[in-house]
Image (cartoon, rainbow, N blue to C red; front, side):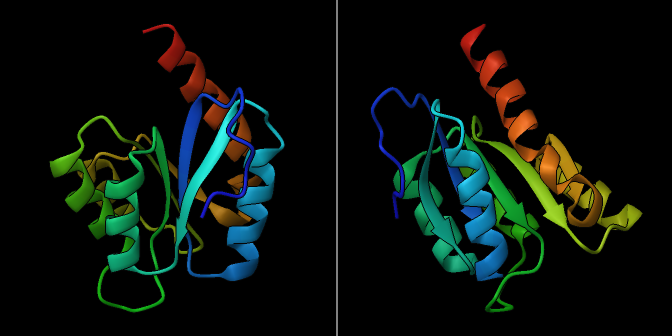
Length: 136
């Protein structure tokens, strides 16, 4: 679902989050930056993998816990990175453990954020990723 005006938006973001309220807030924060487009949203493993493959985003924001319990955001990242190694990833969670941080990094996440502390940093991190994309 594309909730943005794609004109002049050159960074595509896909949001994977099981909480509707959190997902809506993420989309809202992303769209405040006129250079970013939300190309899709998902709350489950299957919808996330299919949506990311279909929309080819620059960045995927992935919650660890997903709605259907058939896989986690880390599992989504493992699958997607095999098919699309250039997709950059931010993993977010309320359950911050060393194991989750390591698993996320091993799957290819560039960032692991604690939702309760780092949530508001997401737009800033997306801008950093966008800047590095432009300078390549």
